[in-house]
Length: 311
Image 1: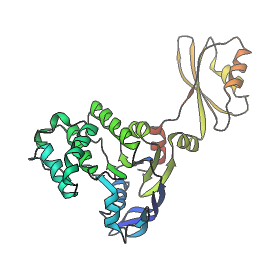
Image 2: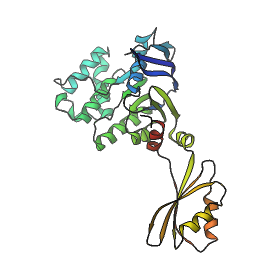
Image 3: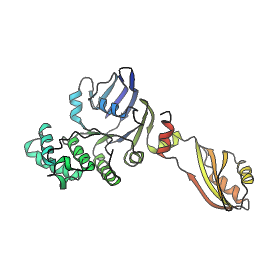
Image 4: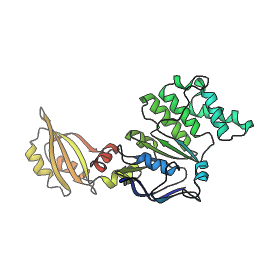
């Protein structure tokens, strides 16, 4: 659907995007993550033809961004972080205005506006001034604007920025619903949002791609070790450490806490090894009482911090 190859953008001497390459498949929801200044917005603006790349190429279907930018824009719906709304207009009048710009046929215009009002959940505010709406409703109106021409590809720059938790959930539901029929590219700072919404995640840091894949594949590729937390009753730390350290693949045994006679430990194990059975059997051979046993899971937040820690 979309092929990006060696895409680069300089602002004078500043390299905002540095030779990034990735593909986006049809029907995919791709999340673009990165710290402030990483190059996310610049990348989206080049994808949509609003910025000309310094070098590299963007291909959408059979069109290239340098030769067919108008054809590509016809395939796209773009919602920037600050939706470009006219605050003194009523919602209906604004969407009608957008429909006229998009040259929607007169006999189809009303049905299209009604369809978008249902999809974006804005029926109850259609006759209110945009300036009086909450940030969440303004985002929904901006989303309806971006989808007016029924684009095959939807590009959303920080669509949930500044929204409260309830509004974020509503926008997430709308994106998931739209994603069943369209290709979506979105940038976000909310890591849990990306994990819950996106099929695939690309992490950008200092203009370069540092990770690309599903959440599960990123966890496996980034994690260099498995962490197992256990709580043992009536045991001496030194004795437990010496015993568990004999298990092949256990790299480190660390005491986290000790409350009353409960010893809280963390075992750092080799990433490729699943040592839970070995650890359990080793403890079973002793008189220690095992109270808790669980494997710590790698989170997208931890992955993000590790890959962008230079920032």
